[in-house]
Amino acid sequence: AAAMICAALAAASLLAQASDRVPVFDFVVRHCTSCLELPDAASHAWCLRAMSSCAMAAEVGASCGGEEGRMAGHGTHGAPEAVQERRRESLHSAIALLVEELTQEGLWAEISKMGAHAGASRCSQLACVSLESLGAFAAALGRDFADRYDFLPQALFILLDRLGDEMDPRSARSADLALRCVCHHCGHESVSSLLYDNSDYLVDGLVLRLMHLDVQRSPHLPENGEMSDGR
Image 1 (cartoon, rainbow, N blue to C red):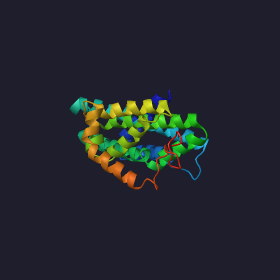
Image 2: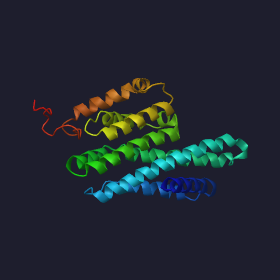
Image 3: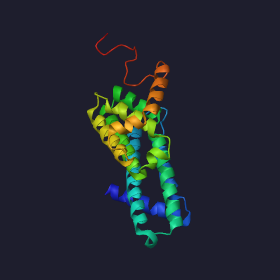
Image 4: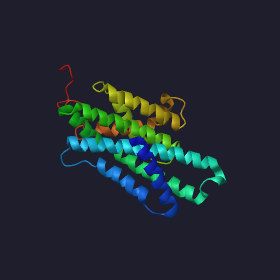
């Protein structure tokens, strides 16, 4: 029921914004991004709000992306082309904003910190929903997810980091699902092909992270730099 409500709200607000230039869809998107903003002290309530926001944003992206394809398939019998173009631009801009929010290092650092101290289950759920949202946005944008915007490398960093998280198998499975979704909708035959085509970005980003390891330590590494077996 919640998914159906989100889909109907997204479709109606996006069409109203494209047809009548009333920014109701932007209001929906701003609500989602505001729920993802990190508070001074993260709490159980914030985690639940962020989780709900991610789920809503993913449903908005998936439903509007699918509706865009159906409208385009109608050709001249669908909405006027100018309306379709405004609708497409509004949707793509909104998804770009949501992806930027979901790929912030501060958000993932907070999720990992909360999971390490308390509420591991809810943090794992938030991580799963956030990761799968990235896959839903890739499905909505298609090749534009990689070609038009510059957030693909950062999304890959997060997906690969979570894919190797042995402490949280659920988020690892979600990362694998999202990575395969990105791979498929960005036109790659395999995950290996996706990583190869973006290897320059990944290597550059890895080098920068290694250079700033003491300042920007991965939340999965021990604070004292020792191996888990004490070496």
